[in-house]
View 1 (cartoon, rainbow, N blue to C red):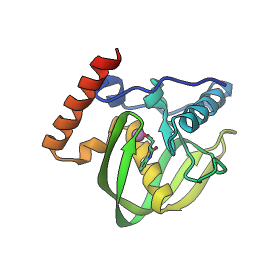
View 2: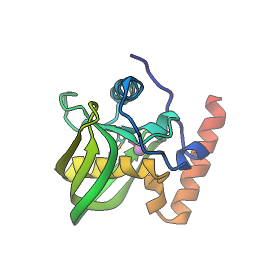
View 3: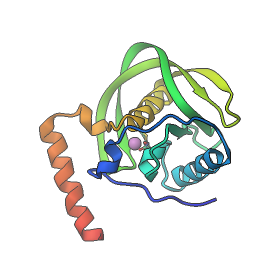
Length: 167
Ligand code: GNR
Ligand code: NI
């Protein structure tokens, strides 16, 4: 088990489109375990591999209150969606910034599990929002991309400033 370092906006590595996993092997299983550990330690309710500088289509999610529902999705795809929901989002790669984003309210997702077996899942509300947020990371997209250019610019300036302090 290992804690991984989380990249922060505006790091360009968060903008790379992650590559599909061709074979779910031990390397992917270790990555998923390390991502779950990193997510819980943060703490967060989701994490995508590009956030820890791995350009592969792997995400982990746990929206339970007691870390009792870890889920791993390899090569996730949204097959169908319904409704819209506007919720306040945050991101471990955009620390201390919270803004409302509109997402699908219900989604049907297909992915591979850690044995490499395909599965499908219906998700709604926070779980659906979190999965959409994580899949966006796989496509190099961040929740700040849904905000106005002015808001995004303010956030970028703020994070560049705090980054200079912590370096
Ligand atoms: O911890 C997280 N909380 C959160 C809240 C609302 C919508 C999405 C999220 S995901 C975020 C962790 C993260 O950055 N995942 O990529
Ligand atoms: Ni995020």
